[in-house]
Length: 71
Image 1 (tube, rainbow, N blue to C red):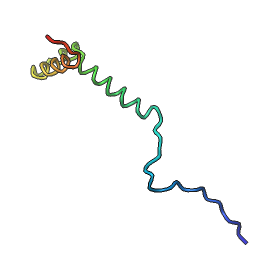
Image 2: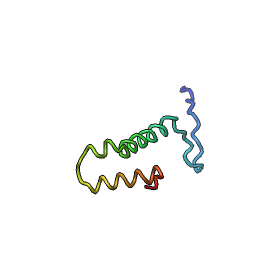
Image 3: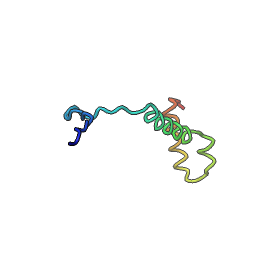
């Protein structure tokens, strides 16, 4: 005679996904975005490349918009 096995109850369907993200799952992409944004907006790095002057003007304009500098 075999013994009955106990299976854990399954979550009810229809309530949507009830999963929680760990704290680092939201923090790491936000930190990566902020780091890349700072690298792009750093004027020393933008002028060191010396490539297309249009890109330099674009980076300067984005920097002025982000920093709310009226010049």
